[in-house]
Image 1 (spheres, rainbow, N blue to C red):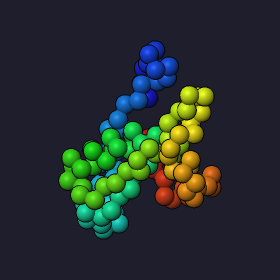
Image 2 (cartoon, rainbow, N blue to C red):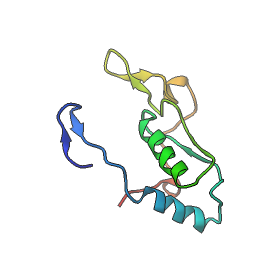
Image 3 (spheres, rainbow, N blue to C red):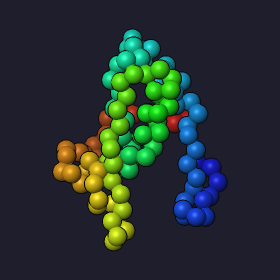
Length: 105
């Protein structure tokens, strides 16, 4: 995160500069080719689609993103209850597997 965005009411989100190199490092460590399947998801689908674009520009060929993300978009009532994985009734849990997560430094 960087500076505050007054128009949107939150910090401006900047792309993680080591995202592609880090995924390449992890892919190589597992002995996977750039055509290995990768599925990305974020809260609304916006950041994961941008990440998919960055991977595709780097030569990855089977990158997919979950359209509308995990929680989807805001309803007129101000709640994230429009579309998205969770609102479609698909399986999910708050239990996380740390070994499958990426933590930015």
